[in-house]
Image (cartoon, rainbow, N blue to C red; front, side, top):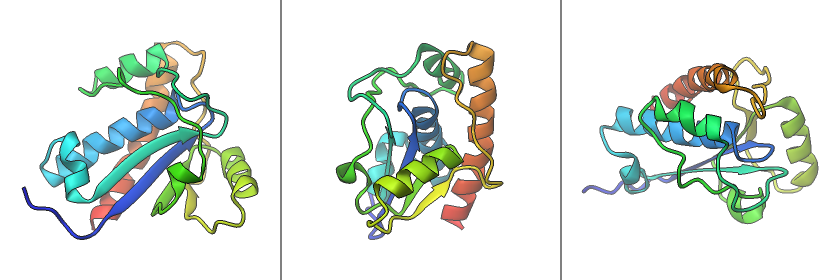
Length: 160
């Protein structure tokens, strides 16, 4: 398998790292792997490190059940997901840190203001991606659809 020289690290960030950011992480991996013609587990060999974390996460929590259900319908799994708190070890050397809301952006910039990291909203329109936590499967599906639309733009932008 051919390795490429260029490396790219992208970190998706939400509040607890049990809903939005893990869904964004796994779906982005799927979309990227499809475009590159490889399997998800081959992305590191293609130069991509894709991670997620939460600004108020407890390390080691599973993805929410409805997040797991809605991504399974896309053929990917969050069964092995374990939440992690956003710290410098997670985000250092990132090419992009993508947050879900304006509030996340503010918190992130407050917490890491001296780090000069490439932090942006996931939504290309700049709108918040609402938190489905506590919602039913339909709420999670709507959230996932919104995330997917933005991820398609992101894949196109990265690979063009």
